[in-house]
Image 1: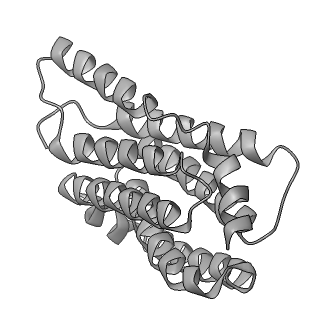
Image 2: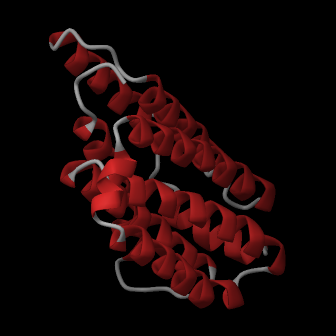
Length: 196
């Protein structure tokens, strides 16, 4: 398990704990200019991501990895709640195939990743990835910018999962960081500038 934590930690080390607070500050400035409050669900999601990034700096320890995953679970739940308030279910009713594709993708990804994971990590990873998939599905129900950001975030975490399961790809760590930052940026800037 320690080797898995070290490999995964290398992939997420660049998730510096100051990046999400900087993104939150950008959102606050942008909203102030538009005279609109920053939604609590967005701020809560960024705060949880900051906690997750901080926990993942201690990459040699399995508890730190699990704590980081728990913090990012808070991010996914917060974003999903925000998207539901924006009317994601209306969008998904018009395009139900999005939810079906998300569930199929979640099942396929877990089938590929689970055999390579330590047995103690399989259930937490499956639960977290289901919440991440739900966030991406609801984001796609709200609009293209949010949906693109959510898919980038999902792709980044999928690469982390693959790496934790022993599947190393060329340029994986750069792709993980790029997907995470791009995804969070699009999620933050794609949130409607209206009270949520």
